[in-house]
Each structure stands twice: as C-alpha cells, then as structure tokens.
Length: 462
Image (cartoon, rainbow, N blue to C red; front, side, top):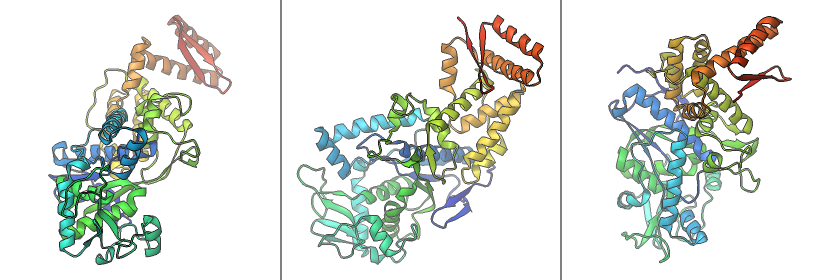
C-alpha cells in the first residue's frame, strides 16, 4: 500500500520527524489509559480522541491488519485502595464499575476499541520479571521490603523531560525514606498490608509501583521496543521518564519507543480545571447530565470540539465551542442526507492529517468539500462523508434526530438552501423573490422567523 509521508512531532527530540516504523507490517502504538478509581474527566478525553484519530490514520496508511494499538487499564493503585475504602466497597467492585462507565464513555466519544486493553493486575508476573532484570544489572535494589530504581545508574535519565535535577526532584514529589539511596530513586515494588492488594514476590508480599505497570504491559504486547508511545503532556515526567528508565535498563535497549507524542493541557472557560473552582467535569457528566451549559451534549459534539484545536496546543473547553461544534455537525448532516456513500478519504485530507495529526487543517479541507456539496456536488458529498468518517464523526445523533422529527435529511437540505437563497434575496432587496421563497416554504408547513441579527430560523408547523 502506498503511504503518504507521515510526520510526527517527537517529544524525545523536540522536532517533527518523518515516521519510519520498525516494521511496516507491524506498526505498534501504546497509550496510557485510565486509573479506574473515578470517572474520567474531560481532560482525560483528549488523549482518547487524539490517539484514536492517529490509530485511524495509521490503519488507513498501513492497513488495519498491520497496526496494533494497546491502551492499558490501571486497576491496582493506591488511589483505588483509598477510594474503595472511602466508599465502603471492594476494590474489585470499584474498578469493575469505573471501567464499565469508562468503556461506555469512550464508545460515546466515537473511539474505536484498541486491539488490546491489558489490565495491570493481569501482568504482575511480567512486572516481577522486569524488576528482577533491573536488580541483576545493577539498576535497582531491594530495601525494607521495597525495590527501588537506582536513578544515578542511568546517565541518560531525564532525556525525555529535559529537566534539571532540582526540577525533577520538585516534579516527582519525592518521598523521603530511610531505605532510599538517592532522592530521585523511585519505587518499583512495595510491601502490602493485609487490607491491601498484594502478590507474592521474591521481596515478600507486595504490589507494584505505578510506572512499572506500563513498562510490563507494553513489553508483553508490543515487545522491548516499539514505534509510538502516547499520552498527555502531564505524563512526560515522572511517568514516561520512569518508563523509559525501567524498560531501557531492563532490556539493554537505547530507546523504549522511537516516537513520543503528547497532547496539550485542557482548561475550562479560561481557568484550570479543579474541584475547588467547581469547574471539574467528567465525560459522563457532559454526556448524561446538565452540569455544563445547562444541557447534555452528544459524544460527537465533544469529539469535534476537541479536534478543532491541534493536539499539541492547549485547549479552552467552553460552552460556546460546543455550541459551534454542534451547529457545524448539524449543517454537515443536512448536506449529506441519509444515502451518501462513504469511500476512501481524499488525498488532500489524508495529507493534512499526516502532517503531525493536524486536525485543524484537515477540518479546513473537510469544510471545502462541505462548501462544494452545497452546490449539489455529489462527489463533494461523498468526500465530505468520507472525511467525517475518518475523524470518527458518523453524524448518527443528527440523522436520528431528523428521523424522530419526521423530516428527511433531503428535505432539511432543501429548506436550508431555500433559507440561504432568501437571505441573499433580502440582502439584494429583491423583495418579490424573498416573498416567493417564504410562501413556498409556508406551503410546505415551514414557518420562518427573521432575527434581529440578520439570521433566520425555521420550524415545521404540525
């Protein structure tokens, strides 16, 4: 299959590079998934959507059978233990329910399921094996039931985040403990109390540290070295830095993944999202409650609102942005109708995405096809639908709404075009043409309402 030149901004090198997979017949990507102690917030939705689009692009470029996408589920963690105790439920009950809601939320956002969703608790043996390798090679040590990674043993530590020692110490929120040799040393294994989850190990009954989990799961499903590792920018340090240290030192490889991709931060209505400010909102709340903007939002609206900003840039999550995304999706649905076929997306659209997943530029291309489709260009309508499909936007919610109100997409398109023609006639002061269009629509049962801002809305009188 001929593949356009895919370019990726690599956090490891701070440059945009041509993507060259280790094996074009086996392109491998790992993305950090949820810690299932609470519902995922809207900031968590960004990497889910971003890397889903990348997954779709890789499948288009290399073929679905040649791409493997792994996104983990962290189901052993101190936050999980604390939340289960707080709610008076078992850890299993908490993680199963939280994961169930997560899977529903991700599906509503239009994301394809990854090829593998490994659970941390199913990979304890691999974690122990890596830790044993690190001890054997002098990169880790056991102390007081703990096993810690010896950071000074790896001269290249800090290459990904490019932080000074002082910055790394501050960023890691290091624990002061008498059994640690150095301030930066981090936990690979720790002892468990009887009330905590635990597994037998050479160092006693215990549980893994956070970072070792992703090293073990990526190794189990993608190998010692793979192509792309993704996640939010907040994971660069310490999580991804520590993953690199563990995996490279355990397997004697110069890199863990060749390309590291990170999406930017998200704020809400111009402010950092936090529970103290009252602007903390989960994906589930956006989909099912009226907490944000006084209404529920379809998953496709959330998805398009996210894709309108380049993944590496910060994004401001606002009600206005959601309203704009919804209006745009509704206009696309009106243009397409219910019988437009979906084909391979046009090359100019794919090329836009292949330039470091530039979704704003891809949407510009998509909108050009929408503009052509307004002129009843059948090929443009097919291209528009194919572009939307590539972005994971099926427009199902809008098609369903049209079916429920008894108005076909074709009729909606006719009405929208007639309203546009009438506005043009009014602007030209062609009052007779304006009245003719109004009367024609009235005969169909369509009532127009001219607004003070120069726009016109309509409704069907039953």
